[in-house]
Length: 384
Image (cartoon, rainbow, N blue to C red):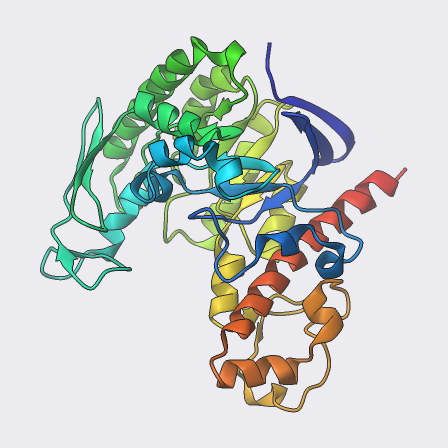
């Protein structure tokens, strides 16, 4: 018996409105999950996402994504368990999805320098970061202090159980774009075996806990491998299924080809989670192709680079033309920022490098996407 209840409320062509019911919380889809990497969203007070003063008449945001890799390293999963699990640790009463570990390990390679070392993005010291992938485990050094760690399909599940995550992800393998197809196929089968181990491990306690686990469909732009991955992993889509968009650096055209190919092959009666999707155009395309759940750091990353979503184009608030522009970022967004502040004021904050500017733009970008998806749902529900 699956714990996550999902029903389709309305479907027109491929786009659909659904309802997730898990752990006494109901959520309508499609939904965008703000990224709560280290038990916080950078620069935001989290209550803003649930306070009508800030989000006006929009439904509250009650599903967020946290990062298993970072929370495991700091502050440590056992400490979070001792605090009364992640919900109590951060004093949040909403659903928490914790994401796959492998991409964070894989991303250590993205920080590689020309001399073969790896630089931690947060620390001044250099550490020799080594990552080793085997059938049984992933071994790596922490980017924070160089300490050695092992991930296995089983201990990834156990760590997320220590967090008391509502929705957990399996330990997959994220193949770099420049891998040859033979290597990618080999890593695909490794991920399939890992998924089986993870689900077998959780099965022994599935009926006694609140957690659910999603498999993750991969493999880049090789559509035949995508099909193999869907065929194998759909057996584990008891509560839902995730799709890793692609890897890194693919063109927009190839990415959308993968989305268009993949969606119809996935189980129709389960929520479909398309990972790492966060621009208005990409979200619209994915919704039109039957996906239900999304996440991305882009909304807050844009905010920290003085960029804001709007109805026509992204606004670079530091551009000179906004110095005396006393209009809001967009007239259609009901967020606290658009109701109270002008582009001129936001540019003033940017020029003065005030942290408030990052907070306001990050918040606006999250609520802009949230509002956009609410409009999608309302339009679909109101069509006859």
